Image (cartoon, rainbow over all chains, first blue to last red; front, side, top):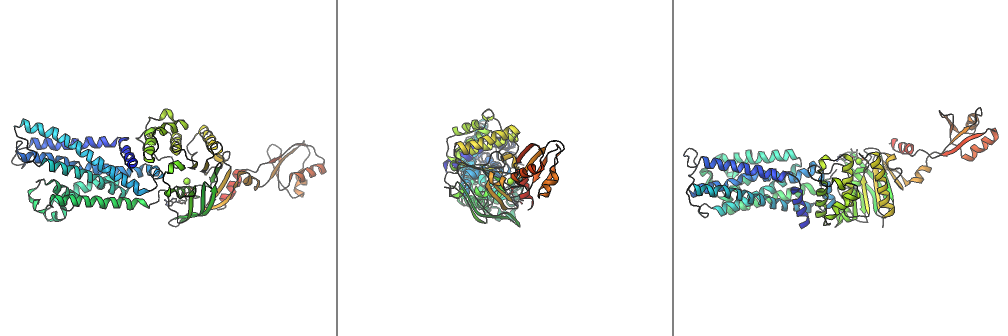
Length: 256
Length: 296
Ligand SMILES: Nc1ncnc2c1ncn2[C@@H]1O[C@H](COP(=O)(O)OP(=O)(O)O)[C@@H](O)[C@H]1O
Ligand SMILES: [Mg+2]
């Protein structure tokens, strides 16, 4: 099994997509952070001032924006096998297909977590000097840095799993990526943004991820958030469901 | 033990009966050609054998086991399927290495196998830039990784140039005859495998139409004798009177169907003509193949 997980990680590391994705992720987070820095303390933007613990909390959670990219990476981890028909060689090597799926999911967790680590290091490299220069004091506890970091770690790892599950379900790479983008940018935003729908939204992966991090992004929605442990449970539940979907749709199908 | 055993295998895709009650075996130390026109059901049979397609009924066993029950399949079976099973952005070496890692084989096997198929120089190149022939060689290299004793190849000659086909023939014969492997190789072009195979299994429309050694298949075909006489001596009418069908060839020779050589010899003697040429012709295997497969 360790060999299978290593093989799955090798599949990623021997092609170029992973670092393109990492670059894009860091770029997006960088843009977000620049925005947060530029508009800090701006009353219209509703952003706290640079030297406050609230700002750190805000900026630190920018990394959660990486979810969409690891989700796409997860989609590609499985759909590229169908696109290039490498799935044939994969199943010839490991005819017990549920083992392949398990290895992919496990590798997905690792990749998602590694992305989170990269994202957090990048965030730290931007946020800490910024706060120092602004003359603020960095209080990790007060800014809930450990909790947010853990939340980002868990949610990026689990979003990779969603991607793998989604990919197994649709098998078509373009459909999978479009689905992931639609999910992250449209569906979740609607359910998290429209107050009447937040009852549902808090149960979606994005809502659960926010709960896990307990970020006060939108004060109007706090009442509708799950507790942090609830968010973690919901995310884990989704991962299990997607894992089951991934195996069920792949294990018996004819590869022709 | 029988290396490959297919017993009453059937598989439908919707209304199409792709494989319909096919049975045959392949023994160690021999090359078997699995022949049939496009759409005959060859790929479906081979993919059933490799656990990629689940048959509706019947069995397809390698070394007495279902492929999906094998703990280390790469050590038992080497498979070459369609030519496109590679990620274009990955190098040949990395493609093989990750198969080694997944199969628990030492990664050094990757370079060894590349050397065996003559791809050592291209090991570090991305597969996206490979020709069809190079891809076929890489596919063959992946089949060699675990040094198995059973090889299953689906149209491996597709995309190879004549030199490549020549090389492949020698390689398959070497695997079977020198290393004692069982080789099952499919093709829709008889001439590609005619010089390689010991046994032939012919399938058309999902059903087995003929199986036997190459020699059996040839002798079951119609016998013809080619004769040529000196100028002026025409044997045609006499041969036809004796029940033969005679084709007059462009070069002046006659091709005689339906008579044994001894009978023709007797007629030659009776007619007192002088022969300049007389040869029993091997029936054209390609013709037999076409006849067997076309009536479906
Ligand atoms: N996945 C599939 N779905 C539907 N029909 C298929 C599928 N695979 C093969 N077939 C059909 O089954 C028949 C046999 O195909 P195949 O085994 O590929 O033949 P061959 O390899 O001899 O050319 C053909 O009629 C083909 O169209
Ligand atoms: Mg075929």
